Length: 140
Image (cartoon, rainbow, N blue to C red):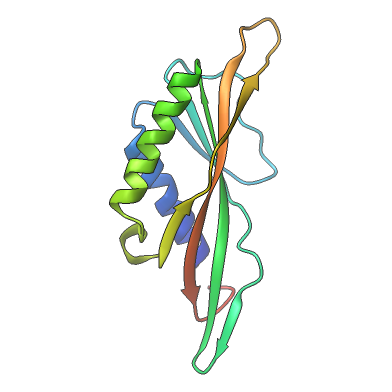
């Protein structure tokens, strides 16, 4: 696998470890999360955008600041806050994803009501995880 996919898989594993009873989905930008929210909450990890790398020429190394969108959904604001806190604790425990990244940093969250037909509004929040990593090829 490429470094990008290795980092995304490690982020998904980190989130699953943080909120083991919640549904954790890894989706690319073309997929939509299921409409029903499980009672234990859901986290959606999007593939995000690695952006344009900084390049060192000798030796050739590409340095990325990959923004990985994370969407957290729960029944209440407290549920969302608790899930985000557990994810934050897991990040602090391993900011390098076992050596895959130089650094992993969350952005501040945004929260809002999520409305569905005929249902009480759930609460949702989103933030980005910024994974700083380097590779010798933009394709690997």
